[in-house]
Amino acid sequence: MARTFIGDLKEHVGETVTIKGWVSVRRDQGKLVFFDVRDLSGTVQAVVLPKSDAIETAKDIRVEYVVAIQGIVNERPEQNRNLKVKNGDIELKIESIEIIAPAQPLPFDMSADGFNLDLTTELDHRALTLRHPRLQAIFRVQAVIIDAFREFMKSQRFFEFQAPAIAPATAEGGAEVFEISYFDKKAYLTQSPQLYKQIVMTAFERVFSVNKVFRAEPSATTRHLTEIVSLDAEMGFIDSWEDVRDMSEETVRYILQQVGEKCAAELEFLGATLPTMIEKTPTLSLAEALEKLGAPDDKDLNPEQERRLCEIVKEETGSDFVYVYGYPTQQKPFYVYPNPTQPEYNEGMDLLCRGVEWLSGGRRINDYRQLLEHVEKWNMDPNKISMFLEAFRYGVPPEGGFAFGAERMTMQILELKNIREASMFPRDMHRIDHSLSEGES
Ligand code: AMO
Image (cartoon, rainbow, N blue to C red; front, top):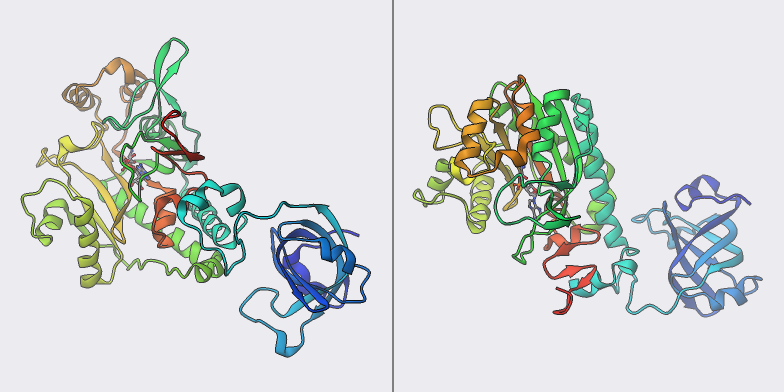
């Protein structure tokens, strides 16, 4: 008999069907045996009656066994309905069970109520914990975030390109870069597709990419990883950096709307509420932000100030989001456009939400001579970025772009405590799959 997906069972009430999936829960209630069975589309309760031919096989089945079950889809009696869960009003009366694959006893409780692992154990056992509804909910939301980014970009006529992961030079500067031995030469894992998205923009005008980027981030914080999924965009023919801000704002708005629409069940399950984006997200210059924080002489926002600024803006406007622009020019990478009337400040921006930076971006330098001046000032070797520089010799309109980290965004939308929860296979200075012991690091 053809397989029916569990999520479609409601359309088959009264019919005999075959489902295939994993046993999430097994409950022995006297003579009856109940199973919760899940597949990619949902979960259903299945029951074996005492006189059923299936009762002997049912006795052998344990959690995480893979089974094929033939049975009749019945509506549950009124008093047994659980309308809070999908399929809570039906159950499958089992006629026969086939064990497709057995499972060894689990190292810990994986039931929805009993799952209470510390993060280290959860990460060390990702191969198993990924089967838990909490983790599935997180990564389903992340998939919707990434899809929504793509959809919105395409709706705005952005072209998707594939950025390289190996580069001859670093884009963002600083020491947070992994050097690799590339045959007998040195190369780097890309910190950002920055230089490539700018090059591709000069050919396709509006471009985006969904790429892995790598940061040799030496600090073990709750919001830094060494390998992240970067959602990048770059656009030509802007009038000012505000055009880039507006495009990024509409991108976030669309992503939030899609998550709200497609992930209502996941948000409820995880107890998360979407952040509030008001009609026009507040925008502050760095100087204004520091003024609000009572630290007018500071040169940048530290993490505590970012947190506090978000609280102040939320109190004042109701917005969970705030843009901060106008950072000291030398503090940002060489490609960021300096304000023409105040060149010591640039037209770079960050978007903060719920106390943490989600996005960076801004206007870039499009004038070749000015770029060369910056390359010199930033002590960079022009030969190492010659491909990038070549693009700017041949007519480039005013342009800008932005990037989000998918894990940061997932973490902040779902109010997770640690970014590692928002990465399926998180890498940090102490972990590649498992903790790195002294000998391995
Ligand atoms: P930036 O370095 O600010 O900007 O990175 C952009 C966004 O990527 C995320 N992010 C991280 N997430 C987790 N762990 C990390 N170690 C980490 N580093 C960065 C954040 C951040 O806002 N080229 C510019 C973007 C641009 O101007 O278009 C850049 O890479 O969400």
